Amino acid sequence: MTAVEEGDLVARIEGAAGVIRLNRPKAINAVTLEMFRDIEKALDRFETDPAVALILLEGAGERGLCAGGDIRTLWESSKANGDLGTILWREEYILNARIKRFPKPYVAFMDGIVMGGGVGLSAHASHRIVTDRTRLAMPEVGLGFFPDVGGTWLLSRSPGEIGSYFGLTGQTMNGPDAIHARFADWVVPTANWPELRDALTKVSQSVTAVDVGKLINGFATGEASGPVAAKQASIDAVFGFDRMEDIIAALKRDGSEFAIATLKALSEKSPRGMVVTLKLLRLARNASSLEECLVREYRAALEVFRSDDFREGVRAAVIDKDRNPIWSPPRIEDVTPDILAPYLAEIGADELKFN
Image (cartoon, rainbow, N blue to C red):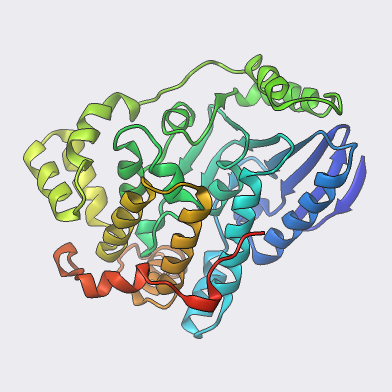
């Protein structure tokens, strides 16, 4: 076992595996800018080291892989008219794209809580393992934001309108529903992980992506759909519109217990965030690559960083924790084309560039 990096990000070689462990268990491994940079350094080394056959991403502690990005620090920078959003999201999104195209098998162990930035580090992996404890969500609309880190690419490729539902409501997926939504590939019981992890560190240097998949499959349950998947028909019927007003109207017409619960969830979200999210999801359906979606997300994220809704959403959820955000504007119908336009505008020299 060769140590490379310690602290908030542990990167080391265990047998044939280049292990990357998010190491802030008290914060459910929330990711900082320095951690993203350390992951990049680890991938640089592991990619060129012939002794490393695969990457293994995991989180320290019992609570989850990663609860997302370090939102409090972003909030503080936004309040002070700082530039952390510009820097952090640029480096994070470039890392997300690198993970998707990484030349060696990249195995993500998506146990427990997996949200926001944690999704970006795991759901673009070549081999994505969820468990009986997985609670995966993209809850950004509740912060006056939208599902980023390539979330619009992933959600727009979920079956039917499942991605629209999860992206707009921020509801949580269990392991099987994460597979149904195409955010993951296998359910492996947490109890089976130590044995599988040990096997992954002992693969040969010549192991292929197919070989790794077969190895994981030997420990998997075969589950591929959960409770939300069972509501696919209802979700498709009410979320198949391109305007939030029409989705709300369809839910009100439906009147079922599920529709009522969904309306309540949407009523708590940022109207601006929902409109931006729906627009980005619809644009993502025609995208040719993850990178195309990340560029669009970066443009929108910089506008979010300047917005009162982001600061207010984080204040209510993370800072004061009163769960009572005052959104601006307060109603979906007040989100005008003029409000929406800056989220979709090109940003010139600061545009996101990939290697």
